[in-house]
Structure formats: structure tokens, C-alpha cells
Image (cartoon, rainbow, N blue to C red; front, side):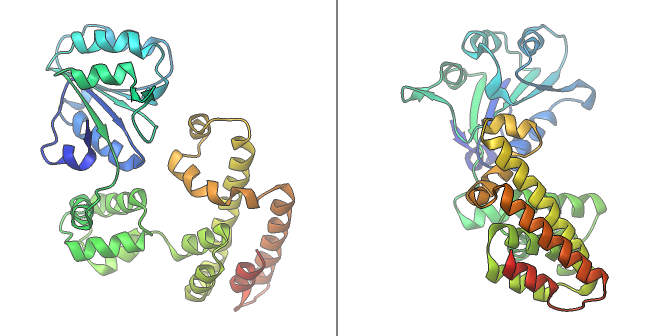
Length: 306
């Protein structure tokens, strides 16, 4: 078994790779690296738990291919089929199984049998994708996502994204795809907006941070800030309803990622149906004030009264 940092030193590709962990973006990086080992036309993405996924994985196929299975923790009869997959593994074919779980599944303190089979096989590898524990290693990883980025700029990027690795990666992808140089001006263009930062602070009940963010927002961005808060409130109330009856994986299939669920969960208890109504009324009054020409204090009032 390896952490992402251990795997990243040499980035080995093996016929069967099982990936899990709390950092979804690192799981994606492992899968993309394995995908890069075969031509684009030979890549396939499947979603568990459809019963035919094992039929597809175990079918013989001439030539190189790479199959990525999302939600791999939901694959049925993994204990039965995984040894067969490992036994029939070919150096030309790769299967990367991406689990939404934060850690490797265990049974009575031991690795689940399908994971134990991967660990014991020379054709398999287990990778848990958690962020690097050393600060320098984390900054080097961030710098690798945006060509030309140094460690100082990586630190600024991390701070601008509130230490959210997924947001950092998305910012770097915008910059990379647009061919932007790694400097402070471009950083402001690709990182999350102040309006989103204010909305997240309000939703989480952090009045101090919300007040600071509100004072930094120009008048032109205030309506967008209210729209961001409205969208976040809708997601929160949806999460509150779903979490009563559904497991995290099922909620993720409904559009709220596991990472976002972890962000919402600490504050979900504050959002019952009555709270949603009062927040919606406050948002409506604030929007009406802005559209009527108010130029100061509206977002600060929302921050205080939320």
C-alpha cells in the first residue's frame, strides 16, 4: 500500500490499480496518469455498480487498453472477481478502480479480501490519496499543476483557494489551458472570486470573515455575491433533506460530492425548513435594496442577520 506522495516519487503503472482517499483531485491525477499510458481511443470510463462492469473488465481484448471504474467500492462480488482479474492481467492493459471511500475497506481489522488480493499480487497496487504531510512537498505538487510556478507562487495560490486542493487544481487547469504565465495578476483571474468567499463565510456562520469579505467587494459584485449565497443555500437545504435517508455515496450521485458533503456537514444542523424561509426572505430584501440603489452596508447586514 502507498500514499499518493509515495506513489508520486516514481509513478508506477500496473495492470490493476485501486485508488481511494479524501483528496478527490489526487485520485483523479493517478487515474489520468494511468490513462496516459495508452492511446486516447483505447480509454474507457465505467461507473459501478452496474452488474455488467465485471463482464467488461474480464473480457479478453487484443492490444492495449485502459479502463477506469468510478465508484469502485460499489462493485458487486469483488471478492470473487478480483482474483480472476489479477490472474488474467496483461502488461498491455490497465484497470484503475477509483473508490469514493476515504480509506481502504477493512473487515475485522484486516484489509477486505479484494483489496488484500491486489496488495498480494505483483500486478496490483493500492494507493490512498491524502495530501502530502510535508509543506514543501504539497507546494511542489501545486507548482507542478501550473507550468512556471515556483514555491512562493504556489503558496499564494493555496492561500487564495482557502487550502482547498480541488479549487487549487481547478485554478491551475484554467491557467494551463489558457496558457497564462504564473504571476500574481493571473492568479487573481483564476482563483475563486471574493463573492464566493463571502457567501461561504455567511453559510458557515463565520461572521467575522463574512464582514471582512463584504467590505472588500465592489458594488458591481454584490448582486453576484447574493446569487452565490442563494445557490449555496439551495445546496445546503438539499443536502439536509438527503442526508436523513441516504448514504454519502448516493448523495454524491445526486450531485453533491463527498468533498462538498464534508464541508456542509458541520453546519447542516443550523438549516431546518424554518431557517431556509427566513434566509430566503433576507436574501430577497437584500437584493431589493441593491436594485433600489443602496450602495453600502447591504452585505454587512446580511452577514450580521443570517
